[in-house]
Length: 308
Image 1 (cartoon, rainbow, N blue to C red):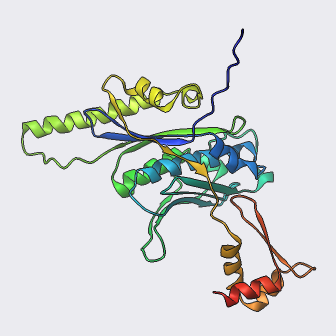
Image 2 (image 1 turned 90 degrees about the vertical axis):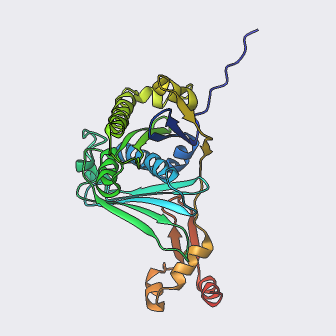
């Protein structure tokens, strides 16, 4: 009797790890259903779908390397065909992303990862938002590099003084995306004798070796649903050993609501609200992340304004 093989689902998780005996720490991100949900309500051209997948993966990796309660936001603003991308992940693993683009100006023959062509000149902003009574942290860097990984690496090297290496991949046709990020964590040992100089040399060599090994990871392996995260990391770093920590599950979850959008509309001047109405006297507002449409009439807006 032949048994049926049940297809394995691609995971939705971020896996933190460390390379034994070194100061190298990393995050492995793999997105299946979450990435599918991000794309579901948008008819993105292939280049847009791929870049929003890469941005989402990078957002998750960077967010997981921080200690925060709230949300981490990564946003690009530029003058190219893809003029804006936003991705945010909460400390609880809720993910959402969207892109704005000028669809007719994207040439399908151009390299899909080409930041200079697809994004153009602009900046990338890194924001940590922990709520109303806390101060936002924000870092901004120019979009410099051939791809999104280059842009983030340049930011960390110049602004945070943390050497970072990132590998990103997304396959919109298969609805899967993945990424690997490693960072050279700081050491506090002062170079005062021969032993400390020797330690520093080892520290630098460990980092170089980790980057070289990471570069050997093929996209097919990163996006292989039959290869789980622990096995993938062991294949890469088994020579020194890899310490695996508990993986964090991820899911698509939009934070929009009628109340939030209504409160925003109700804060506008009456004259401006009137200009937003359709011929039938209602206002429609679509969430750019999930595509949900909200409809407001005068009575609903009045109630929201009165209940502030």
